[in-house]
Amino acid sequence: MSTTIVVICCVAAFIVGAAGAGFICFKQGIAYRQKQAESIMGSAEKEAERLLADADKEAETKKKEALVEAKDEIHKLRSEAEKEIKDRRSEVSRQERRIQQKEETLDKKNDNLERKEEILQNKIKNAEEKLKEADSIKKSQMDILERISEFTKDQAKEYLLEILEGDLVHEKAVKIAAYEQQIKDECEEKARSYISLAIAKCAADQVSEATVSVVPLPSDEMKGRIIGREGRNIRTFETLTGVDLIIDDTPEAITLSCFDHVRREVARIALEKLIADGRIHPTRIEEMVDKARREVEYKIKQEGERAILETNVHGINHELIKLIGRLKFRTSYRQNVLNHSIEVAQLSGILASELGVDANLARRAGLLHDIGKALTAEIEGSHVQIGVDVCRKYKENPEVIHAIEAHHNDVEPRTVIACIVQAADAISAARPAARSENYENYIKRLQKLEEICSSYEGVDKCYAVQAGREVRIMVCPEVINDEKMIIAARDIAKQIESEMEYPGQIKVNIIRESRAVEYAK
Image 1 (cartoon, helix red, strand yellow):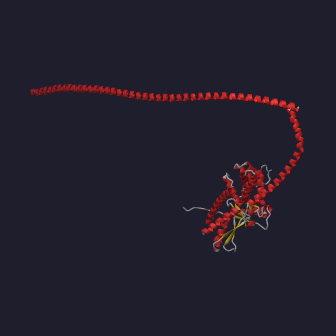
Image 2 (cartoon, one colour):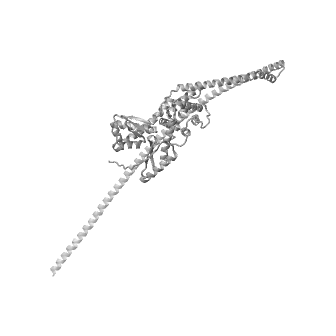
């Protein structure tokens, strides 16, 4: 028991000793840590103080540098401003010197003007004195004459006029009658001379216009190729051109028949191209007809330019030149209207030169006097009114417009140019073989036939063929069906019978065609 107590006491003493020793160690550790922390804090404070000192030094350095840069910039700007002010001052000085020189020059000129004005005033004063002196001398002379003649100035004048009037009455009457007769004889003689000279100088061709064209063939075998299988080629050609192809026994030739010169020319060119190409089928025919139409349009332009060059008329609007070219394919009483217009222009220029008026203006009026005939198939009204409207549209000379308006006496001629154009038109129309009444009536009949057919609804195209004995009408399949075709043909035939006069009979042929076109790509 006592041993146990001793052991316990020893253990307790050891524990207490160990606890004391641990406490002492713990306290010493705390003191060491505290000392170490204080050392670290002191180092941190020193470092912070050092960084603050460095930052202050750096800020002071940058501040000094910014001040230096600012001073440099201020010095630079001040130098530039001083230089600019110096330049402006020198410019102002130059301007002031120039103004001063001008003022000195103006002062000198003013002094010269004052001296000249003084000289002029002296001259005027001397002239007035001499004029007064001359008036006084003239008055004294008149007084002396009045005393000698015992007449005043007015009385002497009246006396002399009475004597002269009595002596000259008979002589004036004789002279006036003689001059009137002389002028009349000279005018008649000159008029005959001018017209004869104009007719002699204008050598016009006497060519009869026809309604057919003949196209030569390389061989008779070509006729069958032109007709095509079951006649499809010739039908396509006649439908597209409105021209009748006459294929008869004439060797190596085909006749094209149509009253419209433009359509006949298109057909002739297209047929010649097809013959030269050798590939004749409906598609190729369409291509060639389109090319021929473009070629004819180009030819119309060329004909207009040729007429301008032949007549030496310049400055005409390009649209009027095209209309002049279209006259190549227009006839009047079997006379080609373009050739007639050129002829009238040349005659007008010759007559104007002989009469001493503007020959260029006379040729211009003569060339344009029938310009309205190029549009008579498209615009209603007389060719005179159409020509006047067209020329006004393109701002032609008022004298030219008046000459066009007066060349058929629609209005009274008021100018010499109008009278010259009227006379030249009559000369051109009156020459032998110039015109034919029957041909003009024939053309008008065919035009009337096509106008009647075109007036019906649903008609796309119509052509008078076979010299007016047949009319072919292409209708729109969407508007006129197969049943309406019969009624339309009967109505057109009745209208032709009631409104037209014609020999024999006219066949009304209506064609209706439907197409479907697609392209393989």
